[in-house]
Structure formats: structure tokens, C-alpha cells
Length: 307
Image (cartoon, rainbow, N blue to C red; front, side, top):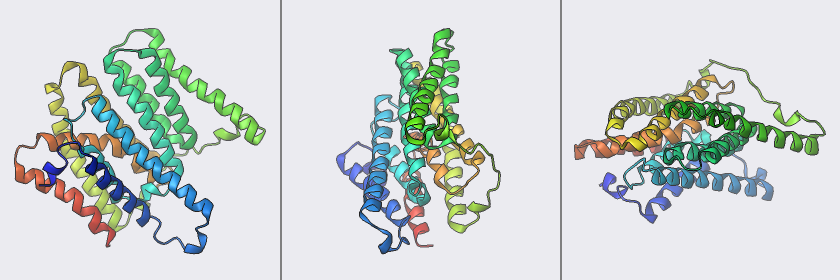
């Protein structure tokens, strides 16, 4: 029943997904005192919420446009559930904005399989990832994804390898100009923390441990079948599917490296993980196992809200 409901792309699916995202958003702010909620605060929160909704729509566009799933809405359901698993992902606007721009960059990288407007796509991808880095420095790691994708395509065109660096340089010029206007300094806007921390003690709580355990175990299990199934995909789409795996690895590296581990960093992992698990749900043959698999992912985050 659960799987058949989201097996086809329908408007009601988006309503459910938006509601789950809203629930996660509200639960992350449930302890904020009412006296601290002035009109500016409310307007800012509404803007952040709509940015999350925009991220869901971009994810759906990426998946449908590049045939990463078979015309269903599993990926957006999973994305919203992952946010409900770790509601802290909705609490940091800079991370949410950075993830949105990373998605725009990922959209251009994955669409390279068409081999049309390659130069424009490479520039756009680097530009959007550069913008993301202005909001959250560690999202710059996704720039490596552009180069890895070019390597997967065995692209020997030297200009294609140079263009992404031009995209980043363009962001640097724009950022410098904004920095002069806002701070009367060329580089004030680029003051980022590049420190690395392997202190995972902030995750030492029952809700984090359960959420991370479920996400990692389901993700690793699904990845095994996802990688195995890539060979069955049309040759033109194979690199796109491999790019999703690499994006998941980069998202995991961000979680490992970031100095301030507050839960928001998991947001960068949710998009590729949602696509990978959605693909696995599609290929499960046993109806009962498919229902249980999806039911666990749906029920656990709601249970965590009560802990």
C-alpha cells in the first residue's frame, strides 16, 4: 500500500512531502519562546522553509529530467523523511541555502550525459557550487564532483577542464565586489573556517544514534544493489548514476570533516542518499519486504520525535 501510493508521480505526493518537511521545520523550533518571534523572524523562517521546498522541487526535477528513477516520487518522500530524522538540518539557513545551490550545480553536472552545451553546464555547475561555498565553506568539496564527472566521461578536451575553474573565479570576483560594497574590504566575505574536526561527541544522543544508524545501514545496503544495477542502465545514463554515488561520498566526507557538528551537515548527504535508496525500493521484488522497508523509514522518524 505504501509503495503503491508513491509509485506514481501525483500532486498529493507533494502535499504529503511538504507537510513532512513543515513538521520537521516546526519541531526544530518548538522550544523557541513566542516573545522572540517578531515579524522579521517569522519572515526569515518562511523564506528558509520555502528554500527547503525549492530544494525538494529541484531534486524532483533532477531525478525526472535525467531518468534517475522510474517516474515515481520515492526520492522526495525519502528526502523529507531524512529531514524529519534529523530536524536540526532545518535550523541553519546558511546550510539550507548552500545545499540549494549545490543542487543547482548537481543538476548541471548530472545533465552532462546529453553532451549538449557542455561548456555552459560546466561553468554553471562550478558557479553554483562557488555560490554555495559563500554560504557554507565545506560545500566547495562538490567542486571535485565536476572534475570526477569529467574523468568518468574520459573527456580529453582541455577547455572543459579549465572552464569549472573559471566558474569559481567568477564567483570570487563577484564575492570580492560585494565584500567591498558591504564591508569596505576585498576579502571580508571570504572569512571561512577551514578547520577539520573528528569529534563526533555532538552525535552522542539516542535520537542521533538511531537516526544515523538507520540512515547509514539503509544507505549502505541500498548502495550495494544500486551499484550492481548500474550495469543494467542505458549506457548514456551510467555516468549520471555513478555521479550520484560520488555525490553521496562527498556528502559523507562533509559530515566527517566539518568542525562544527550540529546535524545540519547531513543535509548535503540527503539528496544522493534519497536517489540511491529510491532506486533500491524500485527493484525490490518481494512486495512484503518493500512495504516493510519503506514503513521503517516512515515510522522511525515519527517515533524519534516522541523521544
